[in-house]
Image (cartoon, rainbow, N blue to C red):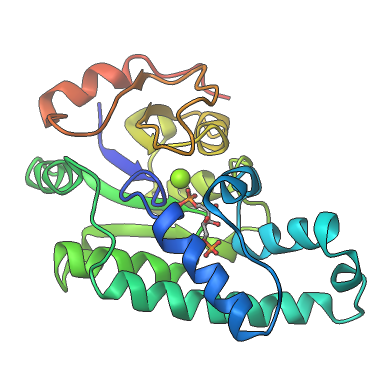
Length: 239
Ligand code: XBP
Ligand code: MG
């Protein structure tokens, strides 16, 4: 029986990457006096690497080897990431990044139906509240019993760790939950944790491989409670 819904954040609850995270990275680079600038298309390629710190290290290793070979490169990237997160949270907290269609209604309907809600995301924890509070109100964070975010697990998506971390905190089996994702990396993570998954691709992920998804939808608009359980029965064989 369906008991819990577990939501990815970036790309799923809101389309945050192109006009949210990307300009935040570029603002941090400018502030640090770096000649790094990630344009829309290039950022789409970099999204293959989840995690902002990992993404910057991946970029430096391939395009700024002098920076990548600095003895304190990890500290420098951590400092850049703190600046980037400051820029992103300011942007998100201003309400500049709306939720995707149908998300607010689905969350409200799930709560009214007594389903338990959680978040499983690669992004930094403060980015979650900065995005959700302006959109859902000051109580928004209390709607989610577990918020698995960022470095709380050693291996980020496509590893299943973050979803396993959330299931453990919910105390629910994967067979009683549905996951919501937007990307191939995210789907691999949720399937790896044995979760039936609904995918709502966004512009950056539209052409990715969503094999194994219980459903691939344009958006969550019109996705109502009673129908969700039908997708649970499409769950993958538990791993
Ligand atoms: C998307 C990510 C994150 C964001 C940037 O996470 O991979 O790294 O792009 O956020 P998800 P940070 O789709 O799992 O929500 O810079 O805080 O990592
Ligand atoms: Mg995502």
